[in-house]
Image (cartoon, rainbow, N blue to C red; front, side, top):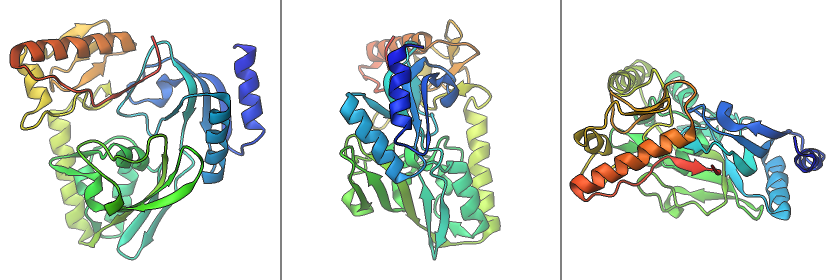
Length: 303
């Protein structure tokens, strides 16, 4: 491990309560299980720790990437020359009347189970969405015509410059698969406005969405979720399928035979294989339809 990287980690660790690691492969922190090492991986213990990490990154000129649950992310094989941040310590989950406050590191599945136990409805549409609350809010994650923003009341963030603030739903310019939150800011907590409901009925709706997802999506393989955003009035998966690419393989990555908008890791796939398949799909669809598919998965790092 380069001395300069170790020195950076030691200097940051001296200011933080949370853990700081140097040169850690990010593959283990992503749902794809693909990716090279980050210069630093910081796991802040609380918002004040997060502010210290962001200040250190600014001072050292390090790019920052917040991992969330590592879904919707592809880390290149050369890794990330910067500071990756894990919010795994942000696990607070609290009912406040008919609202629920959830820390950014809370898994979406855990949030849904909590809402079900407390008889609070409104988030079932997120059933099966991978990742964490922070990532779901930042990317306005959703499925089946709904999205995280639909039930959101407010979001607490730490800005890139270090200020902590709370934004109400109406102050955030949500759009399809994007929140419009300030660049470089980090979600630390979200509050959802829900409605009282029968726990058994909520559980049935969650189960129904999970069954639909398991039937139509390649949940048996590692992936980053949907590779492309759906174009207006169309489905990216259908366009890729019509281009005859389902089941196409490069190395140990494959366009799913079950769903054209998923590229899966068959075991030991490289980011380069995934990107080559994505490029092929975009070219074939553009040639056939004139539609230029836009990546939904975030590409991080370098070759």
